Length: 253
Image (cartoon, rainbow, N blue to C red; front, side):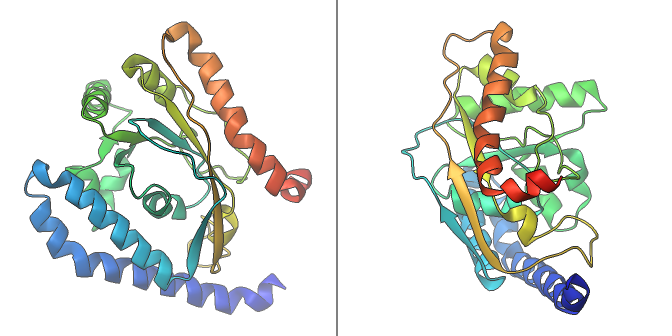
């Protein structure tokens, strides 16, 4: 069956890439002008939300929020990571909660995308201790200004998504140090809407992406001693809906 669908998959992945880069290129001059001043960062965020909506609409991917909690922030936002779609999707999931991504510095190598990470979001070079510490300090500063920070706690897309990889401690250490809540988010369907690999033939299709925004987890009065507990609690909150909605996949894997 998958062999019969392969031509359609390839066409859709090529179409998706064309839409993605065409829309970003179209808006690039506007971003370039706005990014000349840090004062425009909030406008840049709003424009990113608009651009993400256009890309997902043209690629026939729609969002269904299964929960709608009242959000204040700032937060350390922790979504599971199962597809390249996750980054674009976050701007549609939280269009009114201004946030910055904190992620691998490898994103600076991507054409067009690099301008956003270099100018707005926070790139982390884990191999250089000084650079990593600088990124953490900036994240704390942005939290103090009211910006939320999005960190994928798995650190990468798991090979057997939607199963979660073990969470790394960075996001939870940041939340405790800054005394801001953790906001867990479960992205249920992206792994099957757009496989990560292979680049050209990995399964991909239009569809609905279901998302659960969980209640915030307070870090008030927490210390480093509570880090492991906070990490495990966040893991369980995110993982529970994945077990529920992808039960067959979990049983097969």
